[in-house]
Length: 249
Image (tube, rainbow, N blue to C red; front, side):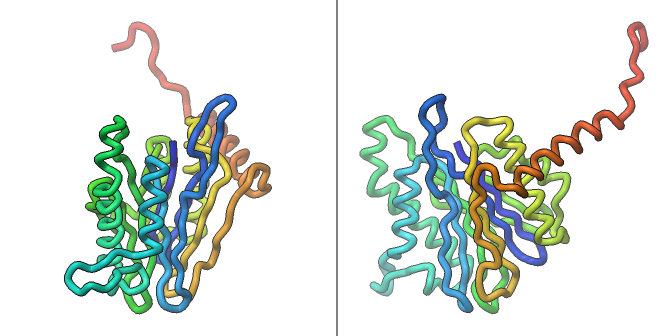
């Protein structure tokens, strides 16, 4: 399982990803799912992955190497993409390229070609954007009315983001709410767990403002988890009990 969330607010972009890829009583593996492509001062991108690990690793490798352009004969890369839209198209092309190479063998082995990606960032002088890319290579874009996208086990964290995040939310408040969303998911699904990787990219900045991994026992995240649990208990205690009684219509 996986949980990744991208939050795009007026001040910038937050991307948060867990690292657990296999969960069991005696078998827990971790791999980084948040991948950075940075040319400071020119362009900065983040890619988060969910799905079959071998497939997502192949896609990320092709994003690093680039793909031949059949019209020009040159190699298309994230570094030379003209716009964020063109960069998102390249991500989709890499997904389809891996499907063309590995899809038949995976199908023969009874393995589904499953993945989803969040791709976000900014090219200097252009708007900051955030996309979700599907296993067919098509994608949708995050908008101001719903300023976040999720992949993986998203149902436990979505209500937090729905209630607490708007496009005008402060950048580090968005990070805080994103971490609460991650904690809520971790508490409800053993397939999502620490460490957590996160980045903060401020709009029109030269480079990532924050690039951090949260390990087990990290003081702030531990305090956030305890405060959120206490706040939920206090909230439900403060709400009056239902006035319904037996025999009432």
